[in-house]
Image (cartoon, rainbow, N blue to C red; front, side, top):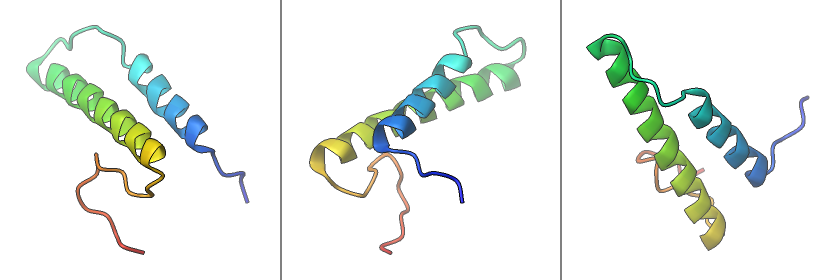
Length: 69
């Protein structure tokens, strides 16, 4: 079984994914829309993850549907 990632490691990977997208625009509307959506989603996930860490809550408010399990 692989090691589990700490909250800090999770944040760092989300941030690395955001940085990997770069700042360039897509050549087509489809590509540009996908890049912008991915950047926004990763930003919201990072913010929600940090907020959950600060409040010691296991729920990430950036994710709408979450199981109660």
